[in-house]
Structure formats: structure tokens, C-alpha cells
Image 1 (cartoon, one colour):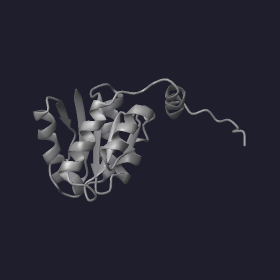
Image 2: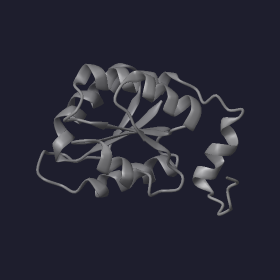
Image 3: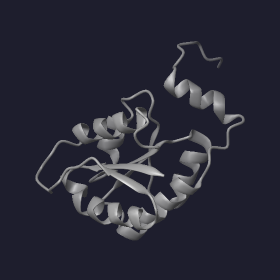
Image 4: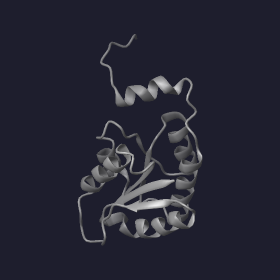
Length: 150
């Protein structure tokens, strides 16, 4: 699988560990930066990752920043992306299974390498369940403004 990975400076060290691990697991990795741990702005790298996945250059994305929050917000600004902030394998699995997430975000200051690897493994191994989730996922990329019955 082709995986795009991007971080900010706070998650540079985690990205430096995850990219070679993903390659060793047999994936093609597109490292979108940064190239050093010099301070950068996470939105720039979140947007790069979103564009890479949305264009089909990568099948899935792994977005990293200190908390995972900021970069996940940046990635989700692209309507073709469904990026879930995850902290353990079950949330990564459910992001794929129920939300058809095509990217996950991880917080380098919140989880270690083993947990990050476990989350990514679950994310990549899980298929979208489809069925009742399809209409909901469709609304994420094509929101419809409507009234909701109380």
C-alpha cells in the first residue's frame, strides 16, 4: 500500500521511526516532510498530506503533530479526507470500519512508538464495513443542510 506520512517539528522524531518501519512492513512510503525538526506549521504539512491522498498518489495517510489535534483539523479541511485522531488500536480500527477513514492522526507527545505502530497496523488492516455506514460517510464529503427531527 502507498502511505503518505507528514508531521510537524514536534512529531519529526516519531515520523523518522515510523517511515522506515512502514517500509519494512512492505509499504511504499511518501514522506511529505519536514526534513528536519526545525519549527514548522502543522497546517502546511496537513494540507500536503490531504492533497496527496485526495489526488490518489497515496492510498492512506498518517498525520503527526504534538497532540494530533491540529494536523487532523488541517487534513480534514479537504472534503475528500476523513482523518481520525486515534490513541489506541480500537479507535483506529473503528475509524476505518465505520468512518472509512483514509487518514489517521497521532499525537507524538501522547503516545509512544509501539502504540503508534499498533494504531497504524489496525488502521491499515481494517476494511470499511459499508452497509449502514455508507450514507453517513457520503454526507461527510457532501454535506446536505437539512432540518433534523427532534
